[in-house]
Image (tube, rainbow, N blue to C red):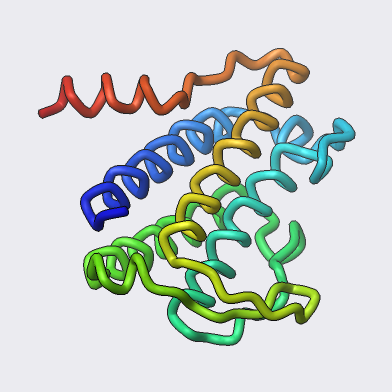
Length: 167
């Protein structure tokens, strides 16, 4: 995998998260926090999980000891989530800017949240992170529908169409 391909996936993930967060910002507090029985209960729980997972992966990739996964109480409001995610987006941007193809195709060793140690290619972990985001954004789409809210389309092909139209 090349740095150029990572840039494309990074921009896609940021675009998709931003679109979902825009819809979440229109929800009432009750809708945002309502437990609908999803993997992380609510729209808030799922979006906080997405943010927290990105933070942990970035920490691992930077060689930092990742702290515990953040929870809903750590990021209680949409405004908090928006601000924290904007900051994280900037940190990710800097990380990707500094990547080389050699580093991307190399391995890193890290511990998961249970303490298990793994060594994997960085590019594969990056692909995992993007796939993880897509999976949970799909869950948020269902939650929006259950709440009677029209979701946005965050398919990769739509990002390419959007991005190509902006170029």
